Image 1 (cartoon, rainbow, N blue to C red):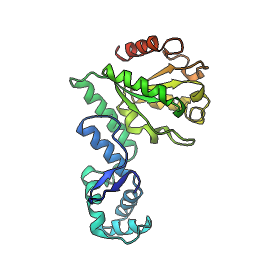
Image 2 (image 1 turned 90 degrees about the horizontal axis):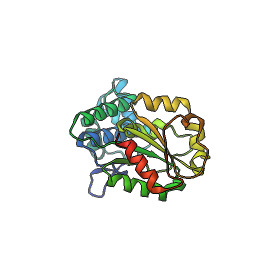
Image 3 (image 1 turned 45 degrees about the horizontal axis):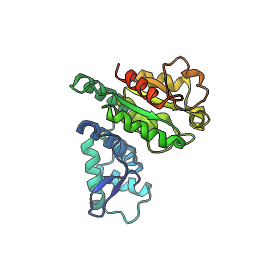
Image 4 (image 1 turned 90 degrees about the vertical axis):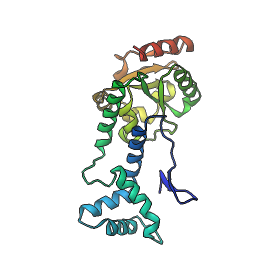
Length: 243
């Protein structure tokens, strides 16, 4: 079933890890979004909107999704889970998850925790550097949301970072020859994307990790420079994140 699957013990589990060790509320939001986006659950909602009962909607959705050997009792736990989390609500829209993420971030800011949260965007070819950077930032009490999956051509920025972006304080983009020449940057790093990110009260912060030309849309942004000295760049970045 994609990002939600059934274990050998009959329990439904996520096939992807939580992005970071957040609160129970944050984890429930991530889980709710994961289930909401499942093709089966999306089909169930469609039939519910047409007036079907939950049982009929589930059976029809299973047929549409070509689930063979349909057994009501086998799918019931997932449907119950989706219902409890609100993923079957007919009033829920995909955009609601970003709004919920912003609310969670504001609640976190009002709590005792002042640790900044960053979403670290990068080219998969720079992974060794990025993992080291994430580890060093974590040591400083900074929560890093590290996307371990490469952003593919044509993917929507909202689909990829959705809840993570909305809950983050900084969108840190690692600039290198690899990243500025990637199709992701060419397609997604545009004025519409920058406006969308900043509308969620997320600060865009470029970090230059190798000699490259900074994209026009990011040239007026304060950036940390790692090209001459990793230590200096790290200190500069940490200082900015904790300001």
